[in-house]
Length: 384
Image 1 (tube, rainbow, N blue to C red):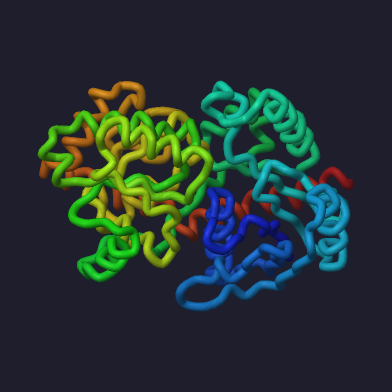
Image 2: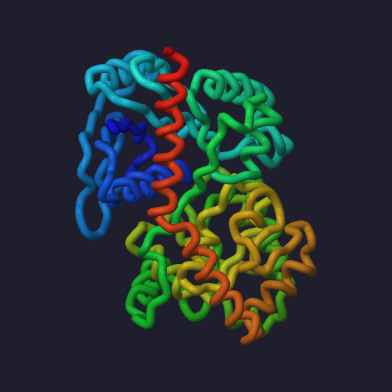
């Protein structure tokens, strides 16, 4: 199989959720004995090397072309490169289907949060939402198959984009092998030093968009006994975005400015140590198409408190303390339990490692390859 992948989200120092999906996918496929021939396509800002594993660089053909206009790149530049490379199938990690005619296309719809949540939580205006709906539906119709990351998103795609569930393949994501328990304190020491953390801490990793409910997390943390707040600081790790300042202001209003840390973007080299050094991990998101950070924390043996909304229950299973993100008292109690109760901590750590192991790179690669084979078979059937 000659497989092409749009890699424009591989940007050094600022991988977003889609970028992490692409990195995990490339590494998972490259590590297989039956790996397809990979063709990676990027623009002037793409850093292909971020997909290299710690052991060896990924073996792939790299194609780069300047992107002065997104529409021109999608409709003209990329199709030309793909046609020259004579691909068997092309994977778009977004909801966009580029103007490729020379091979079947698989598009990826991670979630339809923009169509489900109010504008105040999705961060999108009405015009943007309607444009997204129209373009995503058009792309799904053009694609041979639609990949998505959870059954929750699959149901939304069928309902909101009018795409038959039979056309959608749930592939999930995977937890990189770097995330694992360790007796070596050095990675955590280095991560804490980089992030400016002193002592024990409660951890969140992600962005600060409204649906992530950082205000709810700060309110729940403020509800902890003073003794717990004194012992455990709250670390909110994620690159600065337009909503970070609001989180800082909320922390100040609650009198938590000396107990809450905002280390910004944490490079990949420090992430495993940051997770492993946490006493507990918490995410109170109102919406997730998947939710990789809680799984990465679980893989490191860290107890997890997670929202009961959207795809998070599906992903975390019975391995997290599940909470209503709008129930401040309930969240505060769950956090306190995850931090202090030995039996709960032991049970969550064990179940979490088992749950994370189900999202292996090999399983992820197999699901994606099966979906791509389906795309190629459908294209061939349609041509008969």
